[in-house]
Image (cartoon, rainbow over all chains, first blue to last red; front, top):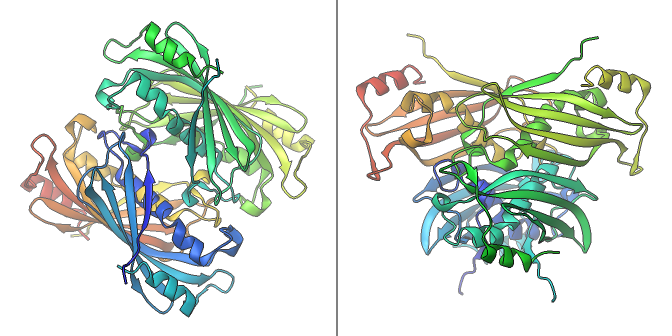
Length: 133
Length: 133
Length: 133
Length: 133
């Protein structure tokens, strides 16, 4: 079966550049979080803060080229690991057909009230699996 | 003649919310700057920093309702005043068909090398005039 | 009687610069909000989101010079108007002893539960008045 | 010999919180970059963009607890690896005496004009070594 990807296209903002003339390194985690919206929607269909059930354990980003203002950027999002209560998201930032940054984010299914992790349901695992790279 | 508007649709980012549960007030000027991209393109067709010839003199923003994460936002941009070397941009932030914020920004046509304002050419005035409210 | 001012000193961040080589115009409202912390403390001594009772009606910013990375900035905050349920904050951004931006922000004493403005108490008016320019 | 650390204390900004009521995960890399200023100063004593000679290869962040608005935060910065042309920075984010996040950032000594890495001088290695954990 052909695997799917989530794709988000955005226009880099002037305010996201820094004095080096390209997009600040600190902006990539912001774009990556924005591009995880469809994953949030799987977990929190209402998209309401009160229903939130995901917590971020950590992320890494590796830069291979600067990103620039004035040309659109595409963020490609996949699932790279599905655990029992957590999963890993693999994201690539592309501009002009070139990889500029990539990163992996570990998210935990989380019960904020009881402050504990929760198992991923089979239904959610299946939906994540559609995007497994 | 029917006047035109610039319209930009965006998805509010989770990172743009604040502890009050809605979009931080500090984000609206960032969206408004992003939505002025087509105006920048009139002045700087290359969109290159080295060719930049606009400077911001000031802006104001008035809030009429909170903006929320989870629903798209449209920024509507018009020109509200065309002077000899400067112009004013009028922008509205809409969500769910409702006005949430509006603002006016004064931009000056500017020569960064000589640190002085420059007259708007007739051609640029005409192009801005297409978006005059 | 000598009037007081709130003063906050900060180090501009590399990520706050933009491609023009100086601090992005969009950052000044962020610094101004941060420098209103002591005013928030007058209204919300707990500094807890759940107790928040202020809402922002609008603000304006006027730029007189760029701000730069690498040198500290001081934000000077005063109260410029005290109304019955609202007040105006006047803020100046200084770098190297020079004014780089100034702005006025209108805040409303607000009951988030009932979605209505609330009168300023005499005690709060007096405390604000100490910072009246 | 006792090793030194760089320490930066900051007040979290209201605009840095997100809808979950605490500091957005996307803010930690911004704080960490700000806290690397004294390292930038070792490499670029002028702190001028035109003299910049560092490039970021990547970073990771691990979260152990949320950070909150209303209480100061201290970022502790050390050098965790010194290579021939690159080095790794280890940073901890502390609030209320508790670790809330930690991260490692790989920086490369870089010649922007020739787009190539440059060896670290012995003098710079020694200065970095003072902060080696």
